[in-house]
Image 1 (tube, one colour):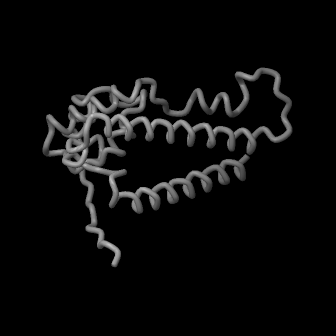
Image 2 (cartoon, rainbow, N blue to C red):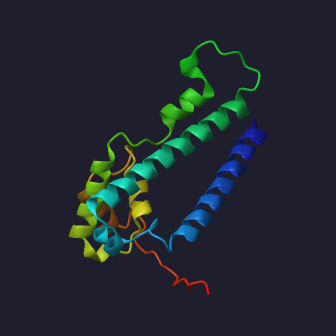
Image 3 (cartoon, rainbow, N blue to C red):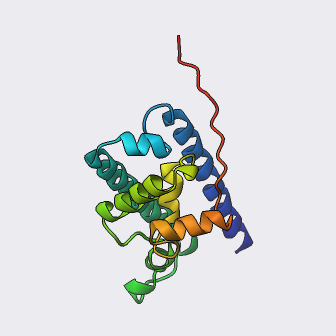
Length: 162
């Protein structure tokens, strides 16, 4: 069991590193933006970002749960399809139950009302909006004031390729 847990941990760390590298590569485009960038986008661009984020999140969650099922249930017969490892994993993983319009609205309200937190990236705000965390711009603001969430983000200036 410890070997399986260690394998999952390694997979998780590796996935995080890949996603971080990908986010770093795309941050010079418009994938990761802060308050000014978000507010410069049209409402349609904000919805497209959130929709794409939600699709990617769901795809990653399903892939991870399928991998967990293969890792932990290799030869175990299935009696109840609701109790397979992947079904339990999906039920317990963090979720987004609202539509893209809702999340885009919360982020827009947060950036509009709290200029002092414009340095917080849009992808970080999306991470905060899972069903088990914050639901409103004001809740995120209160958490920022109390230092319950990260508020200091430092961006290195990227050089343009020659």
